[in-house]
Image 1 (spheres, rainbow, N blue to C red):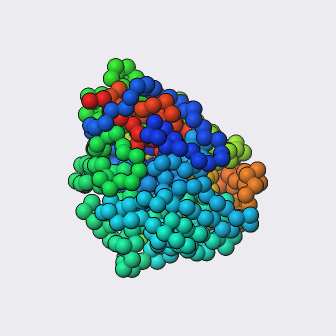
Image 2 (cartoon, one colour; image 1 turned 90 degrees about the vertical axis):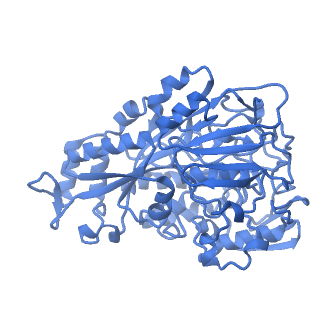
Image 3 (spheres, rainbow, N blue to C red; image 1 turned 30 degrees about the vertical axis):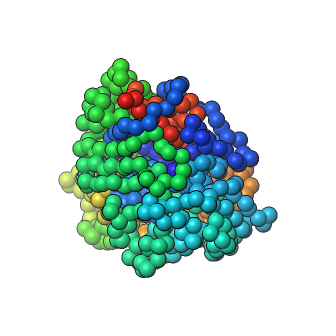
Length: 574
């Protein structure tokens, strides 16, 4: 299903954004030559016997969706339910290999030319939009062309920098040409759904697409997956119903409800009461009680998710500091890292349900993983020295100053996230000890994404990323391609050395060479600190025992979004 394959913002406590789909009890068939990975890495609950049709399943969340337009979704709160209304061109198995399933738009494995510059996609002949109109190669070409257009403003536009064109050879054949070899293209672009209904949107100007009712109004949004977007009461709930014009295998469950709760504690209580069937990102303090609940199955595994304290380097976000970022100095950022007791955060706030990281490529379970990052151990005295070296002087009020401006900034986090609320208070207290005043501000996630994160209008943030199946993170950190509105480098970070390395890493198909380059980048970022990298977190999820799946369709914690792996073929007890 759609939209779970790219690096994306984590709004929920332990969310991740990718769910691959594999041949399962719904009759899917793996027609790729790569290993299918039929055995789950972790299995919360195994059910044998015949699936049941019908019923409703309810998922809890503390963050409302931002949009359902597939080329603008950049957060887990939107992508999780969107995975049920959109179908991917290709899906992935448990190892992240591209596969063709019964619910994939593609009919055959991807064909790649010997020079790596041409991709040929064969679509299924019976594809339809939910309004009954045929889905053809023209829709694929239209979607990719819009994605590549910088006027559209998609956060994934940078993924299309090597894209040359796409042509519909016939209604079921798409030929894509790239200007250069791009190792990311298969997984980031084709293992997802950047397909748009040309018959509805062809007359919409590129610059107007984001504000179009498509993806923002259930009555104006046609879909191509097993479910349609039935209704949406903002900040309360949304409903997905079976798509009567769905061309693929009939899903078992009639209706999916996503309920938005004010905070995670309320959501946990709803899970325990059975008002919610699935909860992702269970907060650490609630873990003992949910583990002892007789009606629940709990999954607690390391996942492709990590949290960070992010700095903003754009001066216009700091009018009271003379329109200059107080984080511009390298030693200032390093001092902040040393002023935070990150190990204690993992040991105490996470209760050991996570591990310290020093850079973005230090997560377990990924072929690009490394452990070469610079560690900044807790050392408040050294932090104070670094701040002094960077020109900060202590004021009479105990707050550092530079050029007559106090070192004060606002740290934003998403409301309802218990862990981040706790962590924001810890950061506030520990930075106060070295002379930095932090004002903390909780913001509703959906409005935060649209009004602050995507346009890069904030001072500092406490947020998380969930990694894509392809490890490239150029859109997050590059100053060449990543700035808003066409990239996810919302902190306006610049590092020319890293900028030069990103293309080298994906202009080769040699995985070992890519791994070495990403290790170089990890070393650079862990020292230069666009973020204070905090921890890889365990993905802690709860499922009521009325939720069932066959063994091959069990949640896959090693994949981004794997807590909903194969959710199309789950069923519920009546």
